[in-house]
Every structure is written in structure tokens, then in C-alpha cells.
Length: 144
Image (cartoon, rainbow, N blue to C red; front, side):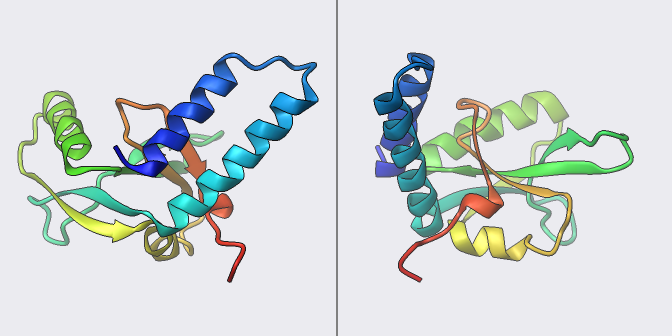
């Protein structure tokens, strides 16, 4: 299991048991979130794309905008090839398309590739198995 996946599982567990009155828990959640931001920046992810399209379009998770004219989206990324394969099974079931493939990319490079797209929100990690998203503006490395 990747270190990032372990951090996310710990974050989700803390969030599920969060006590709003506990400053200690709030600080721990904040620090863990910041650690996740750094891990995503450096993590090599598996990304899924539709191999049937001419430009090998990356799979995106569409989120309707307020006015439904804009389709904001997250790019799903995976902490392992096994997670990507599980997602591809889901994509095949939902879309009927069957020619998906995957490649590797570092979190920061993915965010930078979509930085100019106003409708890009961020990364969805291990979706749909895990409902953890990180907004693009949070992906950073304090040492740079």
C-alpha cells in the first residue's frame, strides 16, 4: 500500500470520528491534510484514458457547475495499477466503452497540465472506490 493511500485512510478515519470541540483533533486533521498535499505533489499516479479517442483523452469525473453550462471536473488518479484496473471495470460497466488504458504521471505534472483550464477542480484519488478529492490549489511542496 502506498504511503499516500495510508495517509488518506487515516485522514478519512479521523474525519469520520471528528469532534468539533477538539482543537487537538482539528490541528491533527489540518497537519495530516497538509502532509497529503505534499504527498500528492510528489506521488507517481496511474491515470486512465480512453484509448478509442484520437488524442487518448484522460478520463474525467464531471461535476455540473452552478449554471450547468460549465462542466467542472476532477481527474481521477490511482495509487496503484490494481486500483486503476478496478476503476476501469467500473468505467466499462457505466459507459459501455471497453478500450481504456493507463499510464503514469506525477501529481504535480497532472495539476500543471490542467492549470489553465478554469473548469479543472483537482484530483480524485482512487475513485470511485474512495471518495477523496484534493483541489488543485492545495497540491504543493513547501520546500520549493
